[in-house]
Length: 400
Image 1 (cartoon, rainbow, N blue to C red):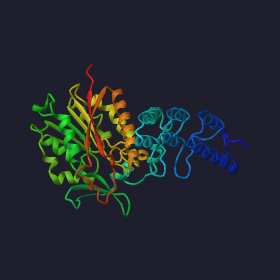
Image 2 (image 1 turned 90 degrees about the horizontal axis):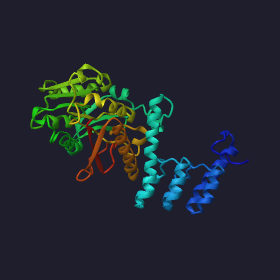
Image 3 (image 1 turned 120 degrees about the vertical axis):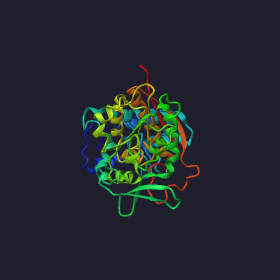
Image 4 (image 1 turned 135 degrees about the vertical axis):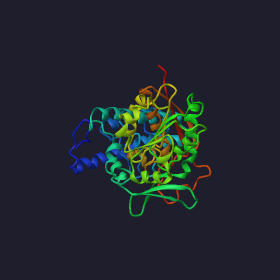
């Protein structure tokens, strides 16, 4: 029995067929590792060897080509549908391997394949609820914990406390034995730099900026907004979680001059008079928990109606792909070592930049080291950001 090609319709219950596919996949990977000629590799794939197959340690054909630093083969395998984000037993993608070898050309080929894949999946999923649904969105639906489901998160109990180092943290329990940080005090450097970049030099700063923030968390960024030399003239905060809202009441945020708190999800208000009657915000920031990239992309689409004009600024907590587990769950910033994170983070940095460009917003990036002096910042909680350098986005509307 011959091995089925990609165009065939194999009977997956046929043990002989499965065995032959496995054998052909293993043979392909080892042929590449043994540096057999490209013509031989092409012949094996034409004969039905699956480019997606991974041997016992997780090495795929694309991993093997990356080890060989074979640019032509990497390009060919991507063209044949090799999976750009497949991870091996050490949680490395093929792109991670090229990074470790400082092979920029191979890395760029694989990273760009990831960018094209995610852009295409976003486009297809916008046409139909099912067509083109990415693997990331399918897998997200399998996580019913508070970290993977917005509805479950909003009905979960949060705990505000301090860790052993005295930093303020907000936790949500996702299992009997595991907590996940909703927000943690070590993010202060990120939030401080974000407010500086959003507000410094803004032409309306001395009159009091009109600020919109989605997601309160620990209130770190809202505190920095309120600490500006001239506090915001209007400071709108959208927050949906009842425990966070109660915490805000205890801290007195409901009485702060110029502060308006909208209780609910941003989707409840984004087209309402409560936001649109402001006449446009000078600064918008969003940092939600347990929403996927599709939700963030949808929020992007409302920015032209919410921002006041070319002088307005936008930013978001950029944790997209910042952990290897964040890719399938696609939690914005706060999801569930590793060079893999760098590859995914790089891909989603470019994807978000391109999507913002589509709606007329140019992004400038600056880097913030979130590890120096904070190596033990996680304690016993699950990490939601494991890349050393945080890439801070600053979006500015293009002038007409």
